[in-house]
Image (cartoon, rainbow over all chains, first blue to last red; front, side):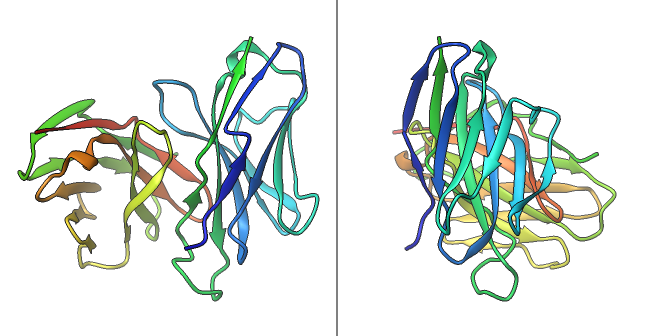
Length: 118
Length: 112
């Protein structure tokens, strides 16, 4: 069964450093998402991406964040200058385009990347 | 704005028994989707069940079923014949066209 993959599983960085979190969505999916979950809290939407552009973003997704689909398979989240409060689990998710089969309105999540900012 | 409320922070159930997790939501949309996701200690988000708001029939998926009350904006999850592997955080989520809105979760412990 196809699945979303994310690398690395755990990233430790120093405050102020740049990090790039990587995701490989399910191959026939065309909507991509990033979510964040601070330890002990609920999952929060960051950004959605479709047709090579951001379709929606939350207040959390400020100028320190950016997303990119550099090739046909990867979807990345970059944090330019990490802060202590960026420490969280980051989930990538993908969703099929209607008409391409599967549960088109269901987002499938990757296993997450745990980001620790020291 | 969409909000999702899970009023039970923690619940426990004896193995093989049935448990119901509650969820309410608030929206002005007429067409939307509701989901229950499971998050075990590994912290991966696993889809348990989904419900389309325009369908009156409650969704079922093996031991998992929902009680969807659209007028009351309620979407509870029933787990029958609970198993030790069901121990996890359970998140209710609402989706309109695009992103998901999550509740704060219910931590379920299945007691052997």
